[in-house]
Length: 213
Image (tube, rainbow, N blue to C red; front, top):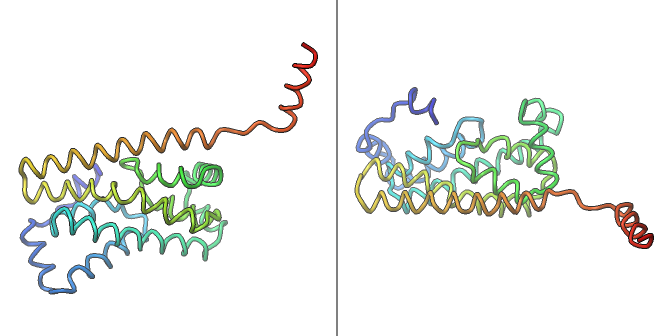
């Protein structure tokens, strides 16, 4: 996000809106398609969500951003399945061991928490989920659950930049408060789900100790 702030210059909101308006009714589809392409790659999705708020406002921008980022993330998930575990491990680099261990032990909680945490990229979760065998029954609901408040919070920032005001500022605060609360809730659930379960030997040792006492 810091790199984007110093190196990417967005045109003014009215210029962006005019560019999209040239596509007429297809402008929404163009935005969704561009967002999906970005989400398919390691490029940060933050800039697209903020742009959605600049172009379309909070409500429509949130809906379009959620659709676009989900399609791109789901495409990356299936791409990783096609590439195979060995190739994806090389692509993940320093994320490899962390992603594999966390997704395999507590998939739903891990995907939800990692998507909610501000500043963490989506792409290691997308590719890791596909490569390491996380089922779509877990990946899809966890992604949608976390993407909805996460994308809305970023779109709210773009909406505030386009139309600064008290109401827009309140929506930013509300959206980010929801993200932070959900992050804490699912992080705690993740920690509980990730704790090692006692083995049968542990139970046996405990029973023997109680008998001796």
